Length: 270
Length: 89
Picture 1 (cartoon, rainbow over the protein chains, first blue to last red):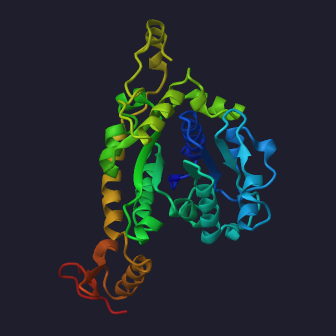
Picture 2 (cartoon, each protein chain N blue to C red):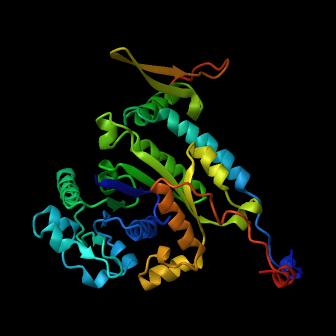
Picture 3 (cartoon, rainbow over the protein chains, first blue to last red):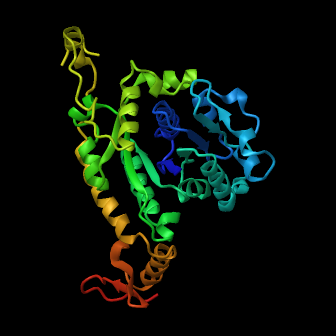
């Protein structure tokens, strides 16, 4: 059975592509056969975060339009045998993707025995975002502890519950996972940032993971190596925990308590 | 709190305000969710028409759609201000 996971958020810039890259890589590290698809037609970026931007020959739209086979368009990850990337096209035509076209590609991935397909949604709630979520079995809703992001997430949770294939067919609803990113426990303690519990209370759903704000995330995208591969990074370890929880393992949250400052920092600030 | 922290302006503790504002707006948006897309527009146009005659608040017009065994009821309620005569247009 192929499970389809959409990574979505409504608001842009909250960490969808970072999350898609790390989740897909994490699932491959667990031995799963994984494809990660960029649905952001016109604004391709997943290839950069995955570090395969120079190997894109054919893209998602080419496959949908029959200009290339799925096999030709899937880019095999350099680091993991069982991980494949399907890039978005750079065309500006928003209607390049159709529901039938997306379904055809997902069906073909199912036939190729992929365990997971991770769909990296574009921001917004228009066609691209709709297509990315429509066929999903799981949704990872990425949210920052910030008012506009939380409000948009609630909107997206509503759409997941009503405008998807599972909802329309009256099947078991999409499994919703809330992922809180860019979390800064020190600022939460100072009362400057919404806490994990605040966000859970407002949205009425528990988090599947909390990714601490980390300089390693920028370094990872600079290098084109998903941050989950950095074992020295709290963000990377938090992504690993998140993957484990999505696979059904129970793990306590880490990196959600404030880090006490050392003596020098207490005296001199910083 | 370091000695040098006195030189920096400390951000205010605003998370509580954020939570309260979100709680209210999320509840409000959830209550209108699932209705037809034209409801907010209908509400605004009705408000404009009513305001031609009566000076009512922005939130005085309430439009709800109820689904009842097989048929739908569009309910419209307008709270008129107390004791003020309608102004002629």
